[in-house]
Length: 260
Image (cartoon, rainbow, N blue to C red):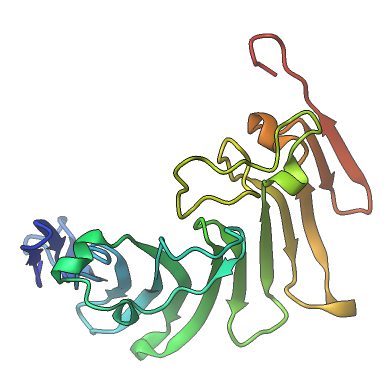
């Protein structure tokens, strides 16, 4: 373990900056090291502490890299919410949020958002052999809007893109339900009239494509269960594209005990 830090103002441990793990071969007398794994973490302040930023597995005999991952984090002030809480937000590097270790930071609320994941596999001599990448975008509530799996970074034709739509008054409430949501006496920064009155924000539509547009776009999976989600926060009508041009429809009802 190395790089332990402590925040005296917030009275919180910030954890270690790096942890090295040695996997030993216990079948030998000297218990030789088979693999070494180094994990690095953010620990500059309480808002980033504990977030893993990289992992590297290596061969201790040759010092060759075998496998690795990098996690890219961005951050946003959760009190700075767009008027449409379901709209995309644009998190930034923590350094752009001001001093997160001074006294005013005691009144801040910062959300970490994972925006990119890179995974690497190495050939002999630590030469990069395979690399993949995933990107994420979010709304004002922290929901994932788009997750893009780029697959092999050198191949633009193996991408997968998953898009999510979340429940809100305009698409997920029955005619009998009170929607849009009336403003409460004390309005939260996260409040929006478009939210379900129960504040439930569930993924109601899910689509997987090849990430292209126009005539090149291919839809691989599509599922829509938005109907009346604001009423009871559970699916009662589900439409699924099963991949052959047909749509499977599932309807569910409740008994007096609230069971399907």
